[in-house]
Image (cartoon, rainbow, N blue to C red; front, side):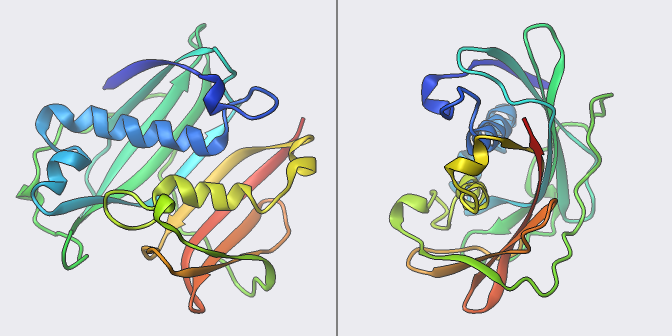
Length: 238
């Protein structure tokens, strides 16, 4: 298991001094890279070989969000491989070793040029799988039907992209959070976030964002009428 301590910066929080959900996922993304650097299976090392990591699904349970200046310990470890997919788990402890966030995710390897999934298990070196009492079950498929409440239309710009030249995973979370406004977040916070990444979104593409206005709330992101991303968020009042 790989673990690292972080202190939450004022640049990472919202007006209530809670960690922004998008920055929570940025921490997960960074942790996945740091945990695999030793065996050169991090995203930077693999990019030099023409290989990209992509997230396919992710579930996150938020017991509470870390606060500004709070020291947290973030832990991550790999699960047992599933055919062409690679599970990875995360959890966060506060200074008193209380569990405050846990996450499960499923990743795949793709060829950087063809964008096709790589099926050869010998492509990378892997750490042995682990398990832990804090483990969140692996994410499942989000089912969305007939979502017609359009929230906004947005163009994807250069600043939305990562080194893979598609919209960074964290920006999808920002799309989810932006479905609601400042007034809503005065009294609500997400307690569970599910992400299903279906198709890469690229620069200059126009995305349409839809919601079912329920709780849990399903948010659908479409490009040219086809679903590229699904998110599901449970909100609680506080």
